[in-house]
Amino acid sequence: EDAHGVLFARWQSIGFVHGVLNTDNMSILGITIDYGPFAFLDAFDPTFTPNTSDDEARYNFLSQPDIGAWNVERLGMALTGILAGDQAEVSGAASEAVAVYAEAMRGEYRENMLGRLRIRGSLPQEEADGLVQVLMVWMSKVQPDTHNTLSAMAALQQRWQDAANA
Image 1: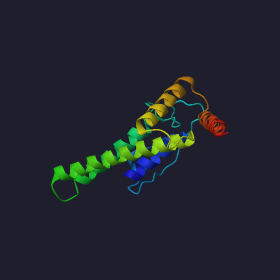
Image 2 (image 1 turned 120 degrees about the vertical axis):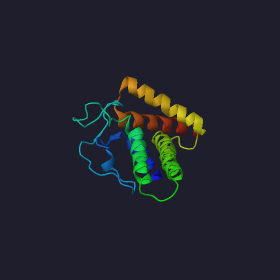
Image 3 (image 1 turned 135 degrees about the vertical axis):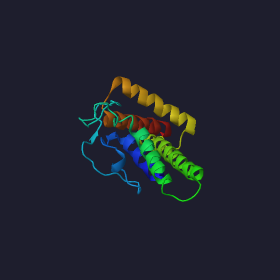
Image 4 (image 1 turned 45 degrees about the vertical axis):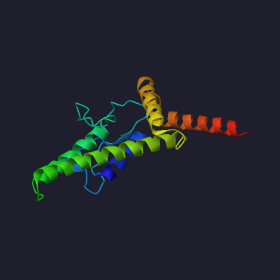
């Protein structure tokens, strides 16, 4: 399930919204299918969904990681009924799959966002997570162009780095 976590993290870091993440649109291989109403965020609106039939915005940008975890959990629950062995043990394995997904998602997202900002490897994990969180809160309030904002911040970081090395 780490493949799904990595995939979802990569989506989040580039502003991709799948739009239809029902359980039947995810493969156990770590891929998704049925790219119907997908989109990329222009203005950063974490509640955006390109799916016009998603009245409750269940598949919005902000909810994608949680939907991925929910889908992994549903798969685990479905498998508990057909896998041999102690049901508590099988259920524990399903819970572990969700934990693996979540950890892969967090780690890959952090690395991708720090890479987009050109500061990968320069901050301790806790500070990096805090920086990305503050940036996402700011972008949610201001709703700037997602790609242009992250690109401009990376260019600014490069200028600071060049000036420091001069």
